[in-house]
Length: 358
Image (tube, rainbow, N blue to C red; front, top):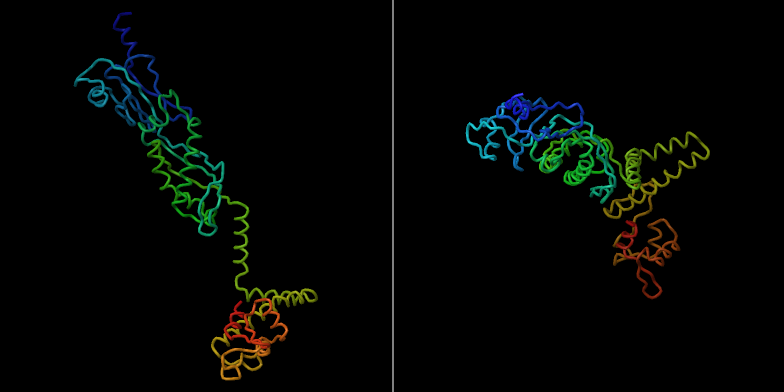
């Protein structure tokens, strides 16, 4: 073997890499301490990029294709190594292959509840999980911030870092988006797409990767918030209170017996509310009472024996359709305001109206 054949074996003439692992993010091509021949062939396949690193500096970046390595197409490397145009000697540098294909189905989730301020429930704790897809878009930044000089950097080495970073960015994005807790559960895909523009810039700036899909699979709230949601749903199902009372009455009368008695309770409540509302309207507007209506008589006019717009306990009892003893008990309890002058008790009309308003 001649000395020239020996030298040729010591020089690298073809650089290529095929990946069959499906989880390799970056791969440092092994040079076995050999130099790269000037004019060597660099083969970069689809879904690959190649980054040259020389003297600790990021040099030329190559996309898919077949490249001849010479001073003409490695200008950055030539500048770093101080080559002149037409330099043909072999050289040495690190060659990194980066896998730019889409890595799909990566899981993320909140190991602990995250705090967020909600317009309906105040500060609530949320748990969420889902999946995301990503690809490498900035090889120098990815090598610098993530892979480093690792010979074979795999996805499982990066999974925990990505998961914690995704949760952190998700929490910040959720706060900025202002998504109510009640709206977190429905339309998961829509919520994920809305959060994606908020999450992506942080991931690209930090790690040189792009999140192409962010999916919310589940958002859960604490039990007390779930109970509040259930109550709100029940109120929505009941709808109009008057219609609900009528339905209860009709259903109870159809059953008869205890059902009819039970049905009378909401009916009596509804009648009581109606009487109180009618009384308040008559007092405020001075409208006459409709004959035959089941409402108490109106308060005495100001031109009667009550010149100062005050009532006696008897007049108040008549207006409220209750006994004088009930009126005096309300005064003693402090619910109805009144004044005692000597042995007489007087009630201002405004105090009675305030009492009726509750």
